[in-house]
Length: 503
Image (cartoon, rainbow, N blue to C red; front, side, top):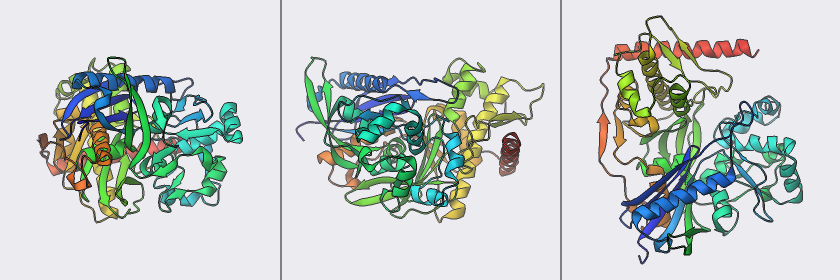
């Protein structure tokens, strides 16, 4: 290999990260930039496309500087993209038509009731792999075509282009070989029938979107074009982009979960529990069925269960309730008490995800007494994460032959030892936290290396370092069962309240 370095980009909801690795898979440089979200109206959550690009450029520049290499030394780049946050632009000049609508946005809730009146509404979960919800790019597009004149005009003239952030970065930062997205990202738009391996025409017609506006669907490793990157000396280089994948899929690949039953949970803005299942997609009610990746003509699948907005709830505890000033104070605060004193936390700030698919329920704290203080609240929040993990794993094991022997974790809240220990206690299986945490960007770089011929087969791609912290279950099962049952009762009460509030 004449160019010894590979670039991996992780463009996520909360920020953008970049890693530079060498031909052995070792990380040589890293950069990160946070990404602000806009809230133009209550329940609206947007991102500014130009700011997304600037954040990626800055993260890449930092990674290059730390690695001490020039873009000309990069053999290839891979991009892991946030999902269900769609970007819209005009194909004639690449000009953005509006801000990106993120998956946290709730403006499309009224469309769900209208959708249920369609004769094929009952087919949506089976065809798409997951139930429709306000987070879906498909519904964002339906809303745009009804309420955004610029998007509507571009659609009518045939100049509208739609893509997730990976496709937008190709448009804004380089020379795309075409309007492409890999199969995992196509499915993440909510427009793609993943069982038929094609966009679903009846669904497109209802939304009002034409196929010509949508990306052509490709394998994970593919020639996507090139990004134009500038080195510290001012020289620019076109770096080939040879891999594209959803960020959650990249995290699964980066954690080395490539055999059935291997599982990982990324604790980001939400927590995403993922279980690799192999070459055949099962159909599990309440749990999402996704493409993992397509390599060398072979498609692989996994089950994914997004929980409630755990990372966003943690930020709410810090900024709104001001329980602590810095995230690294969480362990010490929650560790001040041996249990939550009967306090139950349901972090359904934007509804309940898997396995409920319930956008109406809201969060609560139940069982408050005058004896509770902020340490109890912090611990109850961490317990709620473990309860969600147990519920999801039980659903998967109930509907499939898949058994999960241990759980790998990454992302923000996994830095908390107590959070990891409680997840092990409540799920009843060991929890492993790798020493290296930037697995999503690392996986994107590995997949680019597969495209560049650094590794010829998937089995030759490096696995993550075996260095990790292991948390074994310690809590008595009777105590776990009591906590879990009370938490389930709290969830049930809030769901009943939602029905009363929204008759």
